[in-house]
Amino acid sequence: MKKIILLVVLNLSITVFGQGNTFTQKAGKFEGMAMTPPMGWNSWNTFETNIDEKLVKETADIMVSSGMAAAGYTYIVLDDGWMTKERDANGDLVPDPVKFPNGMKALIDYVHSKGLKFGLYNCAGTQTCAGYPGTRGYEYQDARFYAKLGIDFLKYDWCNTQGITAKEAYTTMSNALKTAEKPIVFSLCEWGDNQPWEWGKPVGNLWRISGDIYPCFDCEFKHEIGNWSSWGVMKIAEMRKDIRKFSGPDHWNDFDMMEVGNGMTKAEDKTHFTLWSMLASPLIAGNDFRKMSKETLAILTNKELIAVNQDKLGVQGFKYTVEDGVEVWVKPLTDGNWAITFLNRTDVVKKINFDWKKHIIKDIDFGYEADFSKTVFKIKDLWKNKDAGNTKKNFVAELASHDVITVRLTP
Image 1 (cartoon, rainbow, N blue to C red):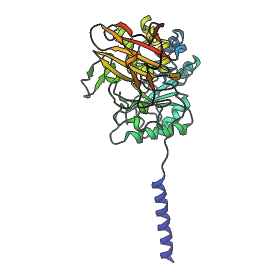
Image 2 (image 1 turned 120 degrees about the vertical axis):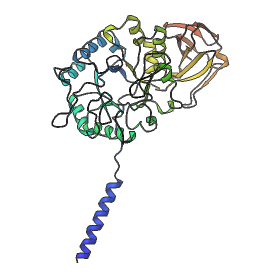
Image 3 (image 1 turned 180 degrees about the vertical axis):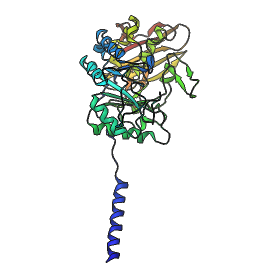
Image 4 (image 1 turned 45 degrees about the horizontal axis):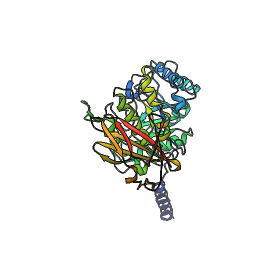
């Protein structure tokens, strides 16, 4: 009899053990939260950890009063440095009481009262990049904390992650957010090291494809501490090959927060904003709205370029051709429209004389085609906001150094 009982117990143990090892939890992002690329503002590029309640309220006020909210900028995201250096006795994160004397919930309510949405930052590792408490081991607890606060967006970084895999770490947090039952846009800030475009679609709504951006046109900025680099606009735009096919509605390639208004020339700011629009990247401003020039505001709120970025087709553009230092970038749009950008990479003025009839643009990833020898398109200059003829005639223009001309073609 003892032998029989032992056998039953042994079999039961094997069965339970087997069940435990075959159970898999599917990734569960909130679907449909970012059907067009998210637009908003993030604190890091200008302020790093020097953030507080006053800054957020002033930013929210200006986002509304300046017309940025009306142009589509919705999210205010507080990056690294919003919390204290230690969790509380219950293991919860603690918003810094000096920076946020009225508490985070009151601040979030203020942002919501303006018709805007609110985002926070944390990290998949044991600590954030700036040394604050990371989420590793606290995923479900932190997700409940965010849900209780009522945030709408989580940027999730990748510092101090030794010994864990990106796909698993981000999947765990995605599941935790879903379990907490508060719809939150999940932004994977993994820098592209583990090819998040290959596995990120069911996990998050957007994923970074590079390390941090730097306010220069085409440079690599090497940091003295930590042996890592930040990247200029063109470096990031051209960093990854063959990933556009992974991007689309609710699963975007994220080319990082913008540096418009942070020290480049007006032409370079225009080019930066244009490329991010053409690439269907999230449009997250990173400048100080309180010191924003009229020129910067005009670039960030160009309705024609924003329409290119927010086009419902959701197709990421690509570089079509290069000739004598002038690049041609193209993006298929709804209703058979196309956005075409001429970009002068050189340091001198260039003359454009583009014969449409000699070109057939083929999008091999998504199957779109424009044959200008067969179809005539009307041309609208999107920076000048005026009609520019049609494709029967060559497109002739002068283009300043590091500047762009962007047109919409309508059949």
